[in-house]
Image (cartoon, rainbow, N blue to C red):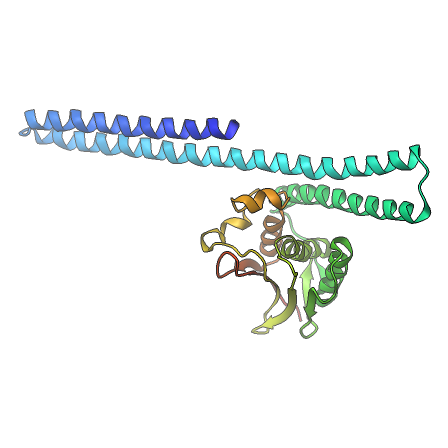
Length: 298
């Protein structure tokens, strides 16, 4: 209902702008036809018309952007609410079951495992939100950089993803390149790599086939490439997906849960470390490749 109301607001303001421009044009054409000899008034009228049209157009553009931003914020709040509430409800249900009825040891261990996974999901959501806030508020501050073995970080993130998402080593393959060292914040680099892998797992089809590799570029940079054979991305969305709160519109966005912060964190971390991040895809249904590129330190 809120989204529909905002869309009606956009339509109203656009129609209002078109109506005002039409009235101005009619008045202007009428005045010119009666006063065609008055060159000064004609010039001033043209300037006034241009200013009014520009103002209406700019007002409409800003209005549309603001409505879209509000819609993204609402979607983010709904997603975070779901990501927080679902694991908490699940953990509570298992605890109440253990408290109120006898459960055999096998089932008990299954409950414990599920609760640990839900706790991990809850922690990940909280960390995503907190990290986004830190990146936004401290982007101007100097990083506490240390030397990082990038291949080691990638292997650590892969082990976490296999355990968290129950992915087999065959479905999540890693081809390490030569040993390289980057200079940066270990937590931020680890978060960026983990988000790329988690994103590939979420949007992969069945059977899942994800490949990760690292490779040096011109001896100055190292690239972490995460390729999947999943749903793919429309070319028009390749730059949009790195914006905060942004999710590709469509039915998939409702099926695959997320906060719209993961890829924003990836690009923010890349920029803060003097690198860059981008996505490649041939289109829907043709898989995607995400690249994180960071400078190498000798």
